[in-house]
Length: 233
Image (cartoon, rainbow, N blue to C red; front, top):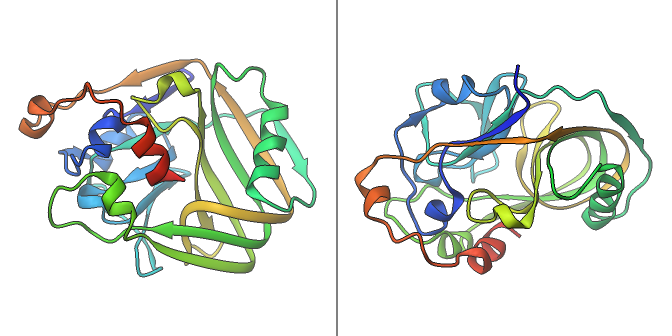
């Protein structure tokens, strides 16, 4: 099995408001069992873990998503980590990022990241379903934030080098899913009591280019990195 990150569509298309594609979750599963993304019309955040898709809705609910659903943007891999690291108390997401960075072989590779543990506090967000195509930075202004205390769960996501910023979200991009599968969202901040980090270096990237009319007619020459950073962080 190849060690690769599969991206279903360039993230700069999503940033410019192409929020609907015909790529089904069943097709995504053919490329990996672990990852994140969103759903058509930005209908919540996506977590794919152990081959199951979870939809993290803007009302705070979580449900298992049917594989017939579609996505405009998903990043997945076959998660096969042989590197696990015990994590002790960390007071912020920045501290967690620093701990992960120290374990990286090089910042020029992609990494699959999975953290399981007890979070003393955690702040996450999701976005409401969009009925019209709008730039992602506008939609992010309507995000709904959630705060949790003393919650068990896991973080799922990736580190991607900055030079890939037109393809996928650069830097750390993590989604949270509680152990009881009832809470989750796009991670904004957290503090960790204790946990375990699994890290998978990834050295191949596979990118699909959609054929929808909206994508084919889009002007993707614009530098969207500033808007992406504002929307994602």
